[in-house]
Length: 101
Image (cartoon, rainbow, N blue to C red; front, side):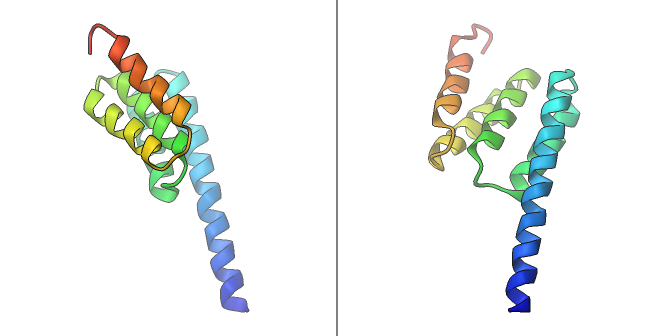
């Protein structure tokens, strides 16, 4: 029973860390600090790779840094896990409609 509680607590802490990293990454993104945002958003993905929004936001950040292949990969991954598909397709559309891409 104790082992199950320890596992549950560690999963909860991991999830909170992912949320915190995502929130901090988005704050940095909104401030135009894209390189710092990349690190935080990648940490969120590493801690919880089943949240599509983390991949979508990472993809949008990659667009801001001009890393279009990585952006596409992030959007494709969000779509593949079946979470946040509308936003992932929106990100792909932004890439398609941007003449500089």
